[in-house]
Amino acid sequence: MHDLKIYNTLTRQKEVFKPINAPHVGMYVCGPTLYSHAHLGNCRTFLSFDIVFRYLQHLGYKVRYVRNITDVGHLESDADDGEDKIAKRARLEKLEPMEIVQLYAVDFHQVLDQFNLLPPSIEPTASGHIPEQIEMTKQILENGLAYEVDGTVWFDVEKFAKTYPYTQLSNRNLDELLDGTRDNLEGQNEKRGRLDFALWKKASPEHIMRWNSPWGEGFPGWHIECSAMSTKYLGEEFDIHGGGMDLIPTHHTNEVAQHAACHHKNPARYWMHTNMLTVNGQKMSKSLGNSFLPAQLFSGQHPLLERGYSPMVVRFFMLQAHYRSTLDFSNTAIQAAEKGLQRLMSAVKLLPLLKTSETSSVNVVALHDAVYAAMNDDFNTPVAIAELFDGVRMINSINDGKDTLTATDKEQLKKLFNEIVFDVLGLKEETGESAEVVDGLMNLILELRKDVRAKKDFAASDKIRDELAKLGIQVKDSKEGVSWIKS
RNA sequence: GGUCGGAUGGCCGAGAGGUUAGGCAGAGCUCUGCAAAAGCUCGUACAGCGGUUCAAAUCCGCUUCCGACCUCCA
Image 1 (cartoon, chains in turn purple, blue):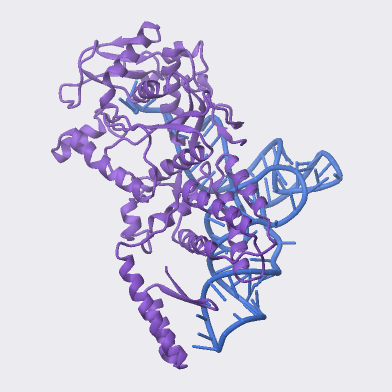
Image 2 (tube, rainbow, N blue to C red):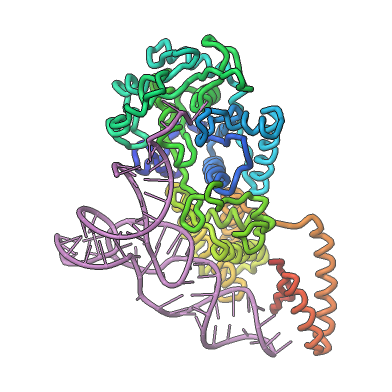
């Protein structure tokens, strides 16, 4: 039927995708920690997995897509006091932690919706799965791969690594990771090994988010929530686990370790990791001042932005790069994408109007196969889009009467474009809410222009066209009549 | 400092031993009252230096530049 290949971080090569229990597919993607707005770089990761989700469904799989929301909060990386990010935000803004989470959760969903991402099948929260995380921690303790010190439970990495390839995902050398850093442990006497990480953390008196546990009041470690929730909803072994590349060395490595320590197997068959969005060659991040929020991107309200860009333009821009490559953001690059998307969508609109002939001078089957070959090659959207542009040329050429198409081929071509452009790539027509009014006005204006043209009053005709152009509306004259497009 | 990854035409970005990537921009032509749109044609790119090979942007070394992760105790 298909021969979808997926690049697996575990083996560092592309592998044929074989679900454990076809036609069902289980996919888990590490979602956001909700202590601030998601920026554009975060969005790229979720967009990449939206394509995976859509394409797998398109191939006929029944996908259960689980994407968590971490609302317990990781510790501040840049603060030594070990304060939780969400708790800190709550304290600063004098709000309940859950108010903070709710604020950003609503924003997060709204943003992803603007980018036309499909909602996941299940979106579990870490705070809603505390018992599961406690149970898992207990099991790991029972299995002898964790130890408790003063209300905190640590995972014993070195002991675990004796029987399991702890660094297989990150492809690092364990000895080198351990080497030369033991001296740094001074003052950190709770933990035995430098790579050990917390499964459960004792809450300091001022810590707001806390739960009861067999080890006293505390909160779960970062990592364990993904293990607990993926197991609960997808089982001890599922098909795909994904996330951003920056999660590989710590979060995912430790997730695999916990899971294996508990269930004696790797949680997922295929590990997929998306690359970073860069600005001027550097990873988008807040500290560098080069990050911006989707809302700013849409409105153009940011020093790095020459103007605003619509969500579909941004989506298309991102799909023109492969998910495992870095993608560099720039105004010229996104403006190029904007023009390209316009050309693609014009062809899509033209397609149903094409005249058919007795014979075809174009090869629709070859185009179809090329598009699917690209998608099957590790979700290669840039190549699929490149093939689609060959189809665009085909459509325009037929429209110009330079090529021909049979009725059967036309249906095939329509099916291909509709399925790939809308269902798989998730692009959609962007129409303003007052589209009907605008349409009416435009019809009227163009009707008037037709009249003055009939009278050879080209000065008036040109004035209409030029003034419309200033409003970003492009008039297209052709033998068949007049059409227009808003840029 | 350690580990890993990357350097492709004016810009973005695929590919990965021999065959046009694609988009945007630019030039010419066709169409057109003019313009736009659309079509056709064009640029002949793979950081540098060596090596392997009949053949290298693609493989191997070295060099230069860039990035990510880690050097943390989520």
